[in-house]
Image (tube, rainbow, N blue to C red; front, side, top):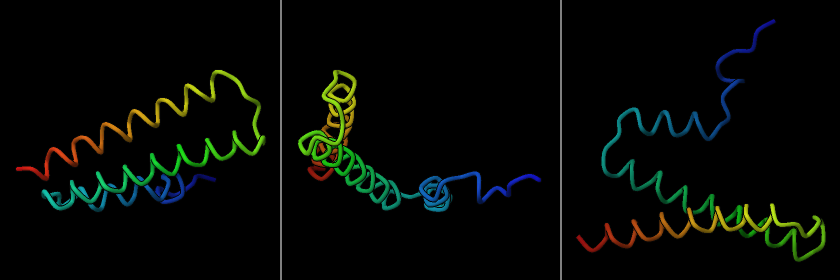
Length: 85
């Protein structure tokens, strides 16, 4: 039994595919805003989990939080920079 294409791909990738299919500047801005929200939610969730004591306090969790924070900062920087022009 093989899985259909829709079951193999997560919803997010399907959404990006359909938005990028007719990509314009508005589609790019929409995807960028969703990436900002997604990375902020990941950082918030990991930090909350760490603060509540649900996960061990180890270096890998801090590295993961740092990576998502850097991506969030990068996308926010480009969002702010692109609104100036």
